[in-house]
Length: 156
Image 1 (cartoon, rainbow, N blue to C red):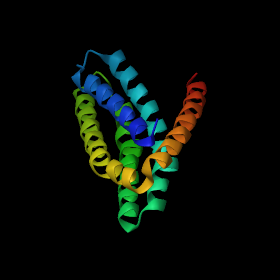
Image 2: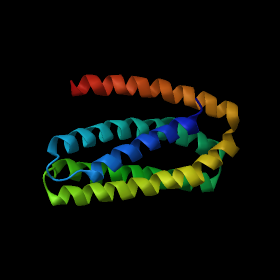
Image 3: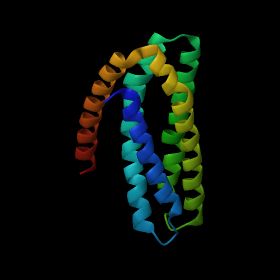
């Protein structure tokens, strides 16, 4: 699978999880905990494969514009990973505040996913070409498997 298609599949999963999360009520404590834990795992793996494999390939093939795009995307990742998700984990799932924070998380991720799909992915396709995207996709799939195994062992 090529790298862009792999990332788009992740994006679809994120949208589904976020839709489920924001549709929950304060009574769905276990469901909210499960969804946020799954979202965190999937986002951690996705962020890693983007930042270690995909983004550097685009940056190397591109110029200043791609470097700026890469820096912005990394900052958006940091905002979610370091600020929004930790706050959500600290918030009681039975609270209205949780609903508000979940909605903010969804809005941030929707913005980020849309930017990648409308700007970054088309540029990556032009800059890298089909063969390179296939190679990157294979590397990303392998790294994803490895990371999920490691993270699953740590959670157990």
